[in-house]
Length: 114
Length: 113
Image (cartoon, rainbow over all chains, first blue to last red; front, side):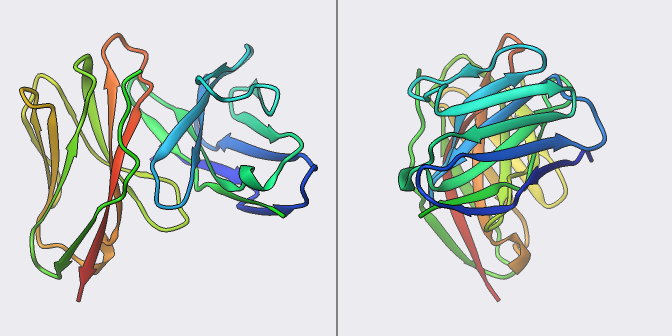
């Protein structure tokens, strides 16, 4: 099946710094990618829908200036957590839309903000 | 929008038993449903899907049942194995082709050898 990668897999940073997470579709082109956030023992919560060449669509309650999304090519979307704080510590997962109802998930990025 | 719960119930079974994981969805406009398996520290993996014009679909060792009357979805795993231990999520997507699935409450499946 289609492969989606994320980089880095784990990141630890100091409070106030910014962190960039990359999501790549390795063997297919994805005009649409999704970013999710998952707290321990909880479900995946959709943060935003990233469309190549246009602005991301953010879910209600997600700060677009805090979580910057860029989808500059058909195989790469990036999520930048700006001025990260401990409450931003979470598991961030991206997915890429393949066919009509296909969605392929990345392995996730564990962010820890000290 | 309509939401799904955030609690994480646990199902413990013995190896070889059949497992049934349940999910209640709330959006009556949903017409496409997916089950995902998520192992610790990894992203979700697709298991099986079903459209609202069906009430049952079978895969390898897995069966999904859909009851639209009561908005209930279940995943049956036959002859459960230790490798099936994971968190299982149902996801629903509304009609209209936008396909932005909403994840439901996960269930942690623990298989004892």
